[in-house]
Length: 91
Image 1 (tube, rainbow, N blue to C red):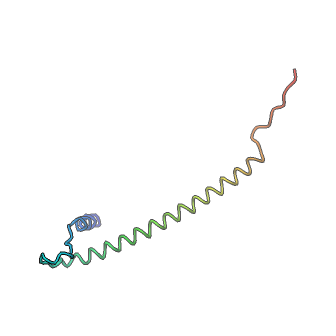
Image 2 (image 1 turned 45 degrees about the vertical axis):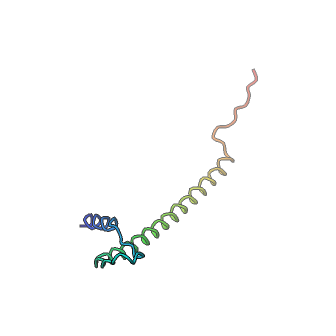
């Protein structure tokens, strides 16, 4: 049912809309479902915008955490070396 509703919503969005600025052409009465579709469309747009902003904030927080971990690793690694320096052997 959800997929059928999604298909109907997409089809309703693709329908051509009547321009209200022209007064010479008699205006047609809009279908009663168009009002609900437009309200739903506004709700989807606002929900999608809020969701994308929340995802962006979560990504930025994750980026800060990773950057701090890398910085700490660099500080700790610069103090200790993995391989000790080999002393030159004199023959």
